[in-house]
Each structure stands twice: as C-alpha cells, then as structure tokens.
Image (cartoon, rainbow, N blue to C red; front, side):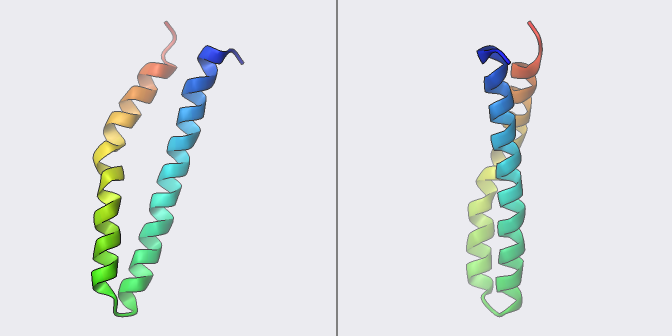
Length: 69
C-alpha cells in the first residue's frame, strides 16, 4: 500500500472508531439516565453533538480522498 493510499484508509478506520465510541457512550448515557441522572445524560448527549455535526463533512471528505485521481 502506497503512502497516498494509506492516509484515506487510516482516516476511515479512525472514523469507524469514532462512530463506535459514540454508540458506546450513548449507551452509557442511556444507562445513567435510567438510574436517575438525567442531567448527566443530557450533558453527555450534548457533548456528542459535535460528532453528529461533523459526520457528513467527514464522510464526504473521505469519499474524495478515496476517489482515484
């Protein structure tokens, strides 16, 4: 694999990890909320909005990087 192919693949794997972490953290926030800490759960969900806000740009940028020239 050449260096020019490595970067898009690396970024794609990092993005997959980010989405997996988001899902895991959301599960934990739901668990916390069920135990009566809705304020903490809301704070966690608020922090996760950055991932949602940037998701479309990341997907588009990865698609561009992975497109052969």
